Image (cartoon, rainbow, N blue to C red; front, side, top):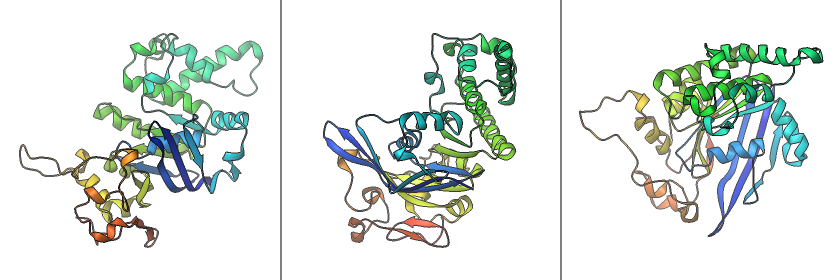
Length: 328
């Protein structure tokens, strides 16, 4: 069953220098129980896409699309109350800095209980105890052992890993059909990262929860995802099944992300520099003409001054004038 259907989504931002396109003609489909990885460097537009889906926008952010549907319903025409109801019950988001999303003046227990729904069929005089019992169950489910100490703690007393687990428990409390995880493992130690990945995979397998996994680490996300989309400067560079994107990458940017990944197990001489593209992600007001990767691409030619179109090769889409024959 198809949950999220995005077609030609464009996001424009008002800045002191004028209005600029931050995400252009982005398309995505997520089915029930599917894990989709969205990968790219900082500034590619990944978090803006997540905010557009959940409706966290402000006056400087302008969203338009041919289609932005949730289970067949147009999200762009929903009222504010309908959108909030949708986010409360069916779509959950784990933000990049989990500790910053918690109220530093309130204990974790009160915040967790406030975010939780009352279990169906619970008498009014048992609602408090029922919610606390459910909160403890969810904390155990996400790997928290000393729940009493955590419930009495303030957010600033938690590690980043514990804060992520609290946010994960809040997300699970409403039994969502889609979880948007925006860099949920950033700043965590390797063991904690692996634990977060396993928890999300367990939810996917047991409850058929769809997951949109946003990250900058291609290999880490690729191992857990069914499909991958590589984003750069607001353009989709490559998208398709994870195995094809990882093992048969056709775009130079995807290749560069693989070669520069710490988890790709590269064999390098001692004190050698990590492989990386020259330059940096351009500013919104200084986007290059034609292919967005052109000034940094080692294979760029004159034709790259024209914007390439996405080309389909057996469900493997690539935006490049000169796609690579095979991954190096």
